[in-house]
Image (tube, rainbow, N blue to C red):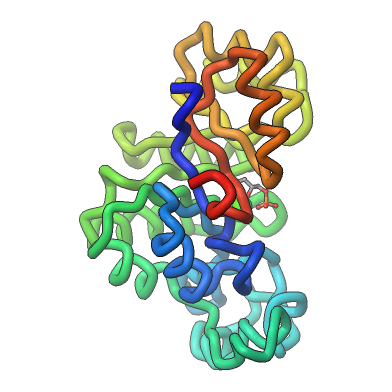
Length: 240
Ligand code: G3P
Ligand code: CA
């Protein structure tokens, strides 16, 4: 497992393309990634859109909080020019649009529910409905920093793959993961190399590491011998 982890393109091939756009996702596929990681927020009229921040300010030419905008408003924005003028015209994709594309390839899809700042009511149910509509359940991993969101997903569908997102090296992450019955953790390198990383593996959990952008860093992890199932990187081309 350690030598050939699945390479997840973080927000698509976001080192070279505007993050969380179809251009970044298509590039990830072309570069040979085995998976894509993306972030989901919800508009005020209940559409799931792929964007990292709670506002459109950083990654589009617009301003405003997604929870206060309609899907039509979000979709009208330019999500490419901030990165480079050659990507002008790229849009904020909806998850529905993304799945229409992804259902035609074999990529694994890690959907991060961005409910750690805005508690989008009903987002978990909506997510499962869209996954079901596109018959993507077998290829999707749902992750979140929000434990309540993970609990809710598991309650609604105990068979979908769910991963806990861990920031830094909290002492109680593995205990909480066990209580929730999680089968995977997405962590940073120091956690994976700590006693907690080993404990997670000993408990049967898969580890996927974010965000590894340098091959040298990955080589160091490999030398430590901890089994890693996936790498989440902005530069899939460096690992494929
Ligand atoms: O899923 C791993 C990573 O994406 C979590 O952090 O801020 O890049 O969404 P962030
Ligand atoms: Ca993310």
